[in-house]
Length: 129
Image 1 (cartoon, rainbow, N blue to C red):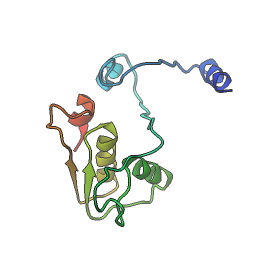
Image 2: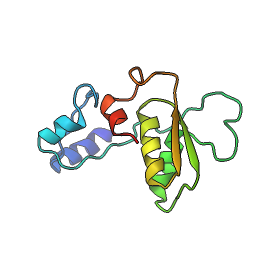
Image 3: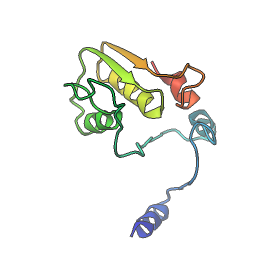
């Protein structure tokens, strides 16, 4: 069934490239240079992970994936206070950027890695607030 759906999408003119690591194999800038003008970045993970620390079950705490899903389903969600994002990967960067767009007064990212070791793609980090 999935193969049939993919075939329909291809027949509509969509080019599908598999096994491409965005940020390493190709960058947004290189795609711009190839003439692409619009980008849709999909969240590949459908479930978030908690860190296993005390307080993660407190009100207002949610996984990055849940936050992104909720805010994309309800564009009226507005953040009015400081926001903390725990993590240094691409989802964390997406959450931080989305929090800024949703009105957070301040966004702070906390991660174990230094700026050069963060698992997020370098171009994602560069474009983050």
